[in-house]
Image (cartoon, rainbow, N blue to C red; front, side, top):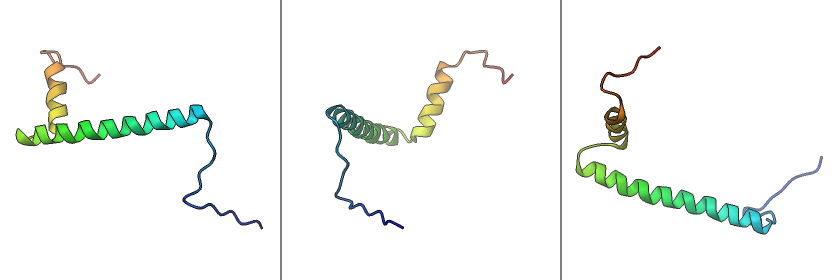
Amino acid sequence: MKEFKVSITERPLLSPEEIVGESIFVGTLRLANAFGANFEALFKEHGLTSAQYNTLRILRDAPREGLSCQ
């Protein structure tokens, strides 16, 4: 049986399009992380968690008469 070994430092060769796509993906993750940290700090100042804020945001946008579960 043939052994398959890959070094952590080895990366497959990517096309220019794949490199751009990967860079955009990683950049988007970093941006989302930065925004998330800023929002977490803002929520904390007001004694909220992000889950509590999200619930309040959903309730704010809900119709006054509510929604049926059916």
